[in-house]
Length: 192
Image (tube, rainbow, N blue to C red; front, side, top):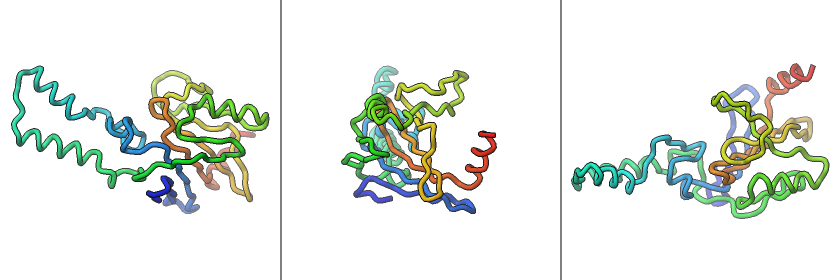
């Protein structure tokens, strides 16, 4: 993790030792991070202290000082950046990805519009890996989830996949994956 730059490199523990590069456009300090909604720090039932306090008030049960301290400590522990794969600072600039700019304030439609202008790049479409019984393949809404280009990129004999991850329609991170030899074999078989 390179906290000052807002980037990270993750090396897989596989025989190929493939690397994945991340550029983070949001982190735990964002509203999504504070709500426990980021993909690598997702806490489905996380509530703010104010929400918990309101629930106690609605039940007309006063909170003791000890309970308040325990709840605040628990929330602080849940949001401790040391336990999550996020940098302390986000990437502040613009990244040139295949000749197209990507910045943290851009939505998927704007990124895809730039890509379409090149006439040679695939747009980013939804990678439907959720289990909600709906076929959402190829959608381009950019709300939440992974969006990738259909054609993987080849460079110096290696194949790379570029993925954008959105949370609440906000660009969370850009991920560049170096595909392993087993991934390449699977892709070859699928193309046959």
